[in-house]
Image (cartoon, rainbow, N blue to C red):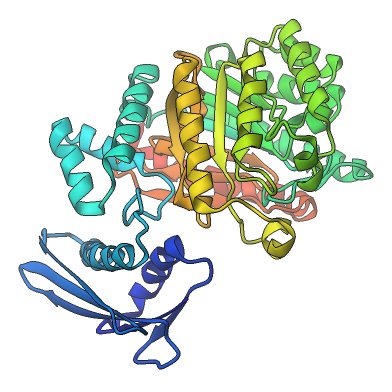
Amino acid sequence: MRISILGIEDERFNRPLQLIANLFFEETKIIRGNAEEADIQIIFNLQVKKDISVSAELTDKSGKILASDYQKEMFPSGSEKERFKQIKNAVAHVYLTVLQDWTGITQKWGILTGVRPTKLLHRKVREGVPIQFAHQQLMDDYLITDEKIELMQQIVDRQLAVVPDLYSLQKEVSIYIGIPFCPTKCAYCTFPAYAINGRQGSVDSFLGGLHYEMKKIGAWLKENGVRITTVYYGGGTPTSITAEEMDMLYEEMYLSFPDVENIREITVEAGRPDTITPEKLEILKKWHIDRISINPQSYTQETLKAIGRHHTVTETIEKYHLAREMGMNNINMDLIIGLPGEGISEFAHSLAETKKLMPESLTVHTLSFKRASEMTKNKAKYKVAEREEVESMMELAQDWTKDHGYVPYYLYRQKNILGNLENVGYSFPNQESIYNIMIMEEQQTIIGLGCGAASKFIDPITGKITHFANPKDPKSYNDGFEAYTNDKIKILDGLFSCLK
C-alpha cells in the first residue's frame, strides 16, 4: 500500500504515520508529496494555537473521498517533546479515522502503537481521576474501544490487588538474569538464544561472568540497603544448563543477594520441556524455587516441528506431571495464537489439552513477526491465519480462561503483531507473576544480569527511565562483563543517592 502524505512536512511525523499505516496493511510505503503511483492520498490541514485543530482528507484512485477533523485544547507543557506529543496524537486521531473508514477495519487499540497500554490507566489512577472519566479520556484521546478499556481496567484492578504497594516500590529493585542458551532456536524468536550443544566452553565463560555480576550487584544492594522485590531467570532457557551449574547459580544468589528468604517471588523459565529433568527439579526444590514456566506453545506436533521446537507434545505433558509430582506448585504455560498452519480448530485443541493440566497461569501470546527472526526472513514459508481468524482465536482464549477461573493480570503489545492484538497473562487469583507486573508497569528499577539482559533504571523521584543492555552474544559479554557491571553500579549510585 502506497500512501501519499501532503500538508505535513515535519519529519518527526514519519514514524507515527508509518506505524499506524502498518496496523492496516501488510506492506506500506509512505510517500511525501503528490505521487501518481500512490494508492491513496491523504491531505492534512494542521493549525496549532491555543487549540490543536487538524483535518485529514483521503482520496483513492476511484475518486472516493473520506474526511475527518479533530480539535483539542493544547495543554501547557514543560518541554517541546510533550508539546509535540499532543500534536502527534491529534494528527494520529484523524489519520486513523480516515483509514478505518476506508478499510472498514476498526483498530480496537485506537492510535496506540506502544507496548504498555495499561500504564496510561495506572497514571490516571495515581492522579485520582474517577474511573468513568478516566475511561472516557482514554476513548476520546486514543480511540480505544470499550472492550479494550474494560480489559485494561480488569488488569489494573488485579495488579493492585496482588501488589497493593505497586506505586511505592521505587526504593526496591527486581532482578532479571538472562541465560542465553536453548536446545534449538525457534523460528519466531529474537531473544538471545544460542543452541547449547557444542558450546560448553562458551557456557563456562558466560557463567563465570554472570557470577561476577551477581556478586558485585549483590554487594552494592547490601551496602545501600536496597531490597529485592522479585528475581526472574529468563533467556533463552535457563534450564538448558546442567543441574550442577544451576545449583551453583542459585547458591550464588543466596550468598550474594540481600535477604533472599524475603524476596516476594523467584521464577525460573523452564520453557522447553526437553530441558527438564528430575535432577534439575530437585535443584529448584532445594533452593525453594517453585514458580516455573513449561511452555507448550502448541499441542499440535506438526506445528512444533515447523517452528523448530524439538520436543513432542507428549513430552510437554509428561514433564508437566513430573514437575507437579516434584513439588512445583505455581506453573505457567504459554500458548501462541496464529502459529504457521494453525487456525481455530488447532488453537481450540491446545485449550482442550490445557484443560487436562490446569496450570496456575496461562499466557496467551499473539504471534509477532519480529524483524530478525527466521519466520520474518522467510514469510512465504510460514503461512499464518488472517486477521478475523486471529481475532476469533483471541476471543476463544478470553472466553475459555473466564470459564475456567482464570483472570487477566498483565498484557503487552508488540510491533507487527497479528491482528494488532495483544499478549495477555491469565492466572488463578493470587497465583500471578509479580515480576511480570513489575516489568510491564515500570514502577521500579529492574537490573538485568547476564547475556542479552536489559536493565531499566527508573529514577525513584522523576520516573525517568534509563535503558542499559548487556551484549547479546556470549563472546562480547565474556569480553566486557566487568565494565558493564561497573557501568550499572554508576547508574545505581546516581539514582539512589537521593534516597540516602
